[in-house]
Length: 157
Image: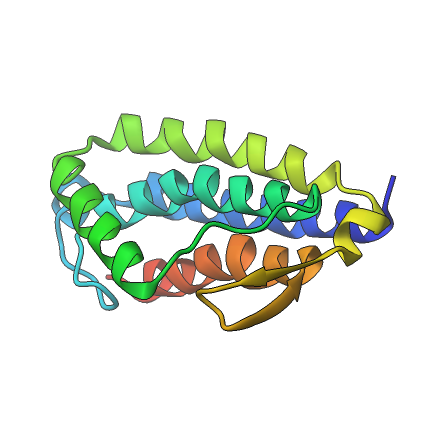
């Protein structure tokens, strides 16, 4: 087992647990209050974060296996976010809490299962305009995306 992978999984799990705790603390009234960032309600933003775990983990595992990343652009991401926001605008607190628990567990397992060789593997990313190691993708995309939203959850009242 890779110590670096285990550290990534541990930090991801701690961050995911913090997101779950913030969601659990929110009242029904707070659930629909728009937050900073995308302007989504807290409930939708929490659902979005956990939904994205599967997508970012899939990218991470593709890179770890030596595959090219799909041609992703900011426009594609924004369109998908708008679609997700429409489809899940009325998500309940219960279903939102289920998603980070399930998808978060899978993401942590994927992170923790990477070898040092896989973490150092490099792949090109059209979105980011340069090559990234799998470790950099884990930090910047899997953990980074959720950390940005966690900051919004912590600032939300």
